[in-house]
Length: 331
Image 1 (cartoon, rainbow, N blue to C red):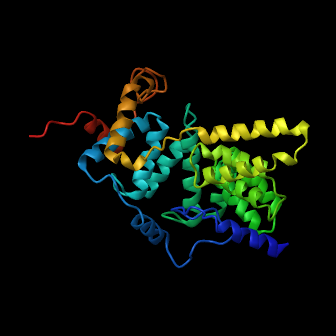
Image 2: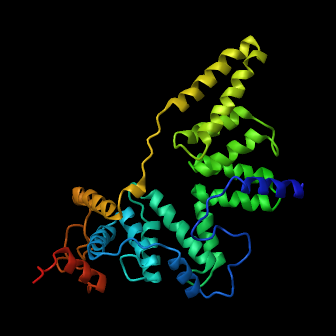
């Protein structure tokens, strides 16, 4: 069975797993002990292409940070990443972690996907000891929370840990959970597994359903592979009984309808970072009334000094945001 599962893993690896910037969840192997946390951080940053290089971009980041401090989860994640990579702000790992935590524990409407992404990044940082002291146990708590939340990328990684440990059934179960969480790569692997039928019973209908789910995203060669399965199913129609032909043909028609849907691919690289930042700020300013800036009081709408709650001192970030919100004219 061990040889079978190892062969299974090798076969899946040939399907081209996308590389990640920070290493995926490990089994029990720690990161390279020869490198310090600072050296790992330096390697990460050196492998990153900075895009916020102008003063204008820095000014936009300050505005986005303001909305992040007011609770906008997307802005919080942008600021956290900027501090982590030193892109637009001076590199500051502890500040980055602080902002990632803001996102992670942000329970406002629409924040969930940004929260999960923040938990995932922190888990990887502590897992590999990038910029922080390596803490596998602490990272595992974050990973377990992500599994509990059915976060696709972590479920996908854990599926392959199960494969490595000779647990084929559990691995496939985790891939199915990841697929149900809209993780396209998991759906693609499952489609290939059931299409090939080498390690599980071949099931072209189940394979077709998985391809159908990712064809709408034009994922890899899912469209071509689904077309191949449809041709195979059409060829087998003559072997079916009258009682099943109608249902079979109806299923094929639905699959063909998926192929007929025009996929409009949005090229995010076509939009410059400047345009993306400008668009983000326009969105935030449009709905500015939804955000409530801090007043220094525990009572909403009451400023500090007007209640029994004392005024707190402004920190450097408060002062910088206030200064840049209404910048002085350049003379």
